Amino acid sequence: MAAEERTRTAPVGASGIARPPRSRLDQPKDPRRRMLPDYDPEAFGRFSERIARFLGTGRFIVWMTLVIIVWVVWNVFAPEHWRFDQYPFIFLTLMLSLQASYAAPLILLAQNRQDDRDRVTHEQDRKQNERSIADTEYLTREIASLRMGLGEVATRDWIRSELEDLVKDLDDRRAVFAAESDEDR
Image (cartoon, rainbow, N blue to C red; front, side, top):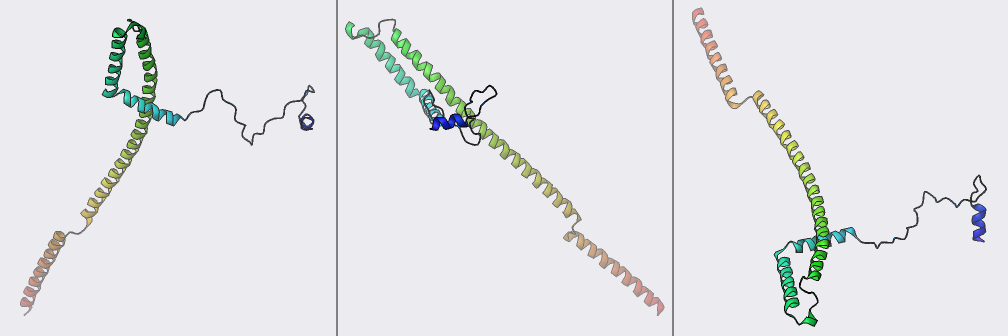
């Protein structure tokens, strides 16, 4: 019954062939099956950083040196039927190449993540520096305006000198008035 309804409601094109119904644009598509497994890129990045951090230590170099020495000594001095890698040590070379082929991309991934963090940090530092410069310029303008304003403000010394001038002027006028009143008498 449902198949009949679909064919009945399916739009028919100009050729008379029934077209499949269009998907609605207001609804998300059903997720497709993926052939590759899902993984968390952040967790993988953290894992690669831990590996890269370990590969860059003296401990790793010591352990790798010990493994290689044991490998070579075992394959040189062990009984013939216990040896698993003969003199040119091709299997050892293969293992070291395999280790290097995995280590290099992990180290690059860790470096890329560090570069991204550094870029964000530098951007934040740049913005902070811009804010500091703007604040410094604002404070410089404020100090300059205060200095200019102080130039117009009456200071204690200026008021004192003005009052002394007024007192001297009053004394001079009093002396003139006293001289005039003595003449009038």
